[in-house]
Length: 188
Picture 1 (tube, helix red, strand yellow):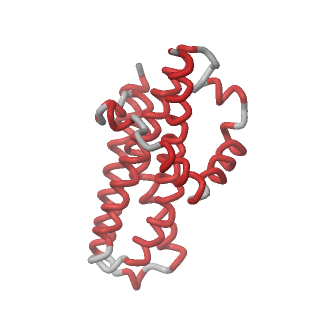
Picture 2: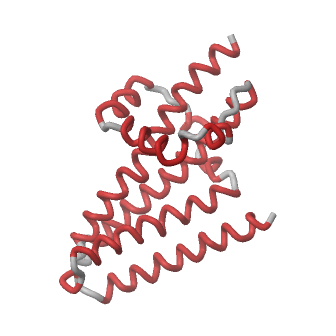
Picture 3: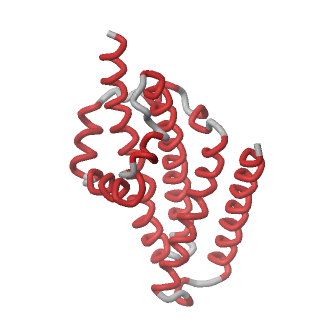
């Protein structure tokens, strides 16, 4: 119950900090930022915007904002090719190494049962929606930064946005390809 109140407040706090960061961008020229400071601001922008969607998604079914048809993978071959060509498997390996490799953490999302498939599908939707919303929002923020003269910060921000938000979307779509195959087998 506390999470349902506290986490949205964190999202509001992060949205406010994003707004404050843009006030800084509108009042300070790019020339006043060193490369290190630009990188730090890019990291903060990514964390703030991604956090807005993450903390809300931890307590509310935000994935329901998209229709079920969005989550159906209609072209599994395209997702598999994107996964392979973009090297998302290395991103997956990194996630396994730092967090998901532990059985306890994996069982939170899939416990090996039929009902676990539905829960895993829901979790992939939640994760995908949060990362997709963050990816689109950060991309729009980068477009907004460009005419303000903050090209360096925009490029650094996008360089972080791709692996930390776009790659998770591809990874969740790949999970859904496997879920769809498994669901067909179980139901047949």
